[in-house]
Length: 355
Image (cartoon, rainbow, N blue to C red):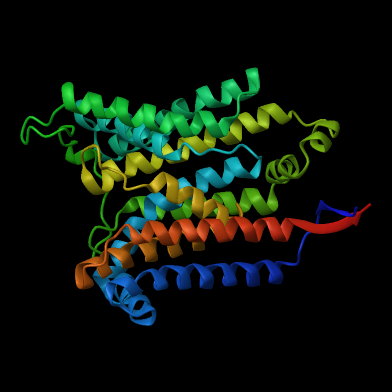
């Protein structure tokens, strides 16, 4: 009796133009899946797509709100991308964002400093908070071999519920009596970009960090080593690299950038930490890192694209009544298609019939 045997083989690296084509197809499929989901609400897919793009890019206000949404997604996406580069699967950016936001809010509320110094110290607090949040997962992975997907994913809920308890029982705003921290000092607030609504300095810093990552990724020995570790950690070890140390640093930096995203949400947008500070920026960062393939330009474009969708869906909700959670349907569909695209671009699947 002949039985099929499935053989999975790694492909040779595909040309860049083929990867670009694959991801354009991914985006088109994602758009189609989301647009089709609007049909039960009496809206044809093309009208839905037009209204989404008009709401996110069709006005100065819409564009500025898209950039405001992009700022934390860019930072979480960059952080996750660095971790994914060395195959450390950080799924905990959401929790790390909240811990960074908490430490930044503490600095913003209880310390008074000159504005430039206050912004710097609060930013460093966010970086430290995110790094501290991911450290247990790194330790458990390298010391005991515990799967980081499990520990980082579960840590999201641990950190978020812990911070929720602090806000409910110990740190209510004395003015509103609402579970949110007191407002930070004006000196800790990020300056806004004149003429662009709520757009703040955090976006400019995100662009600078993407530029630094680009130089590291394309032109530095360290970036080459990280990519080599991601492709073949055993070969990297045989080349004399301290693989564990480099993974440790990359993963720690991943958490720090997620924490910085939380800090800048407090310093640039809400000026307080509350339970609903993030509508899922950490999870969006995972999608951004996957779509961008951990490449700096890819991460930037993916963050912009995801922000367009999220702001576009908010606009669509206001104008047509279609529920915003459809944006999550889109992002989930996009993530699934992107994962299949990466699988196809990295591996060849053959079916062999054997006796």
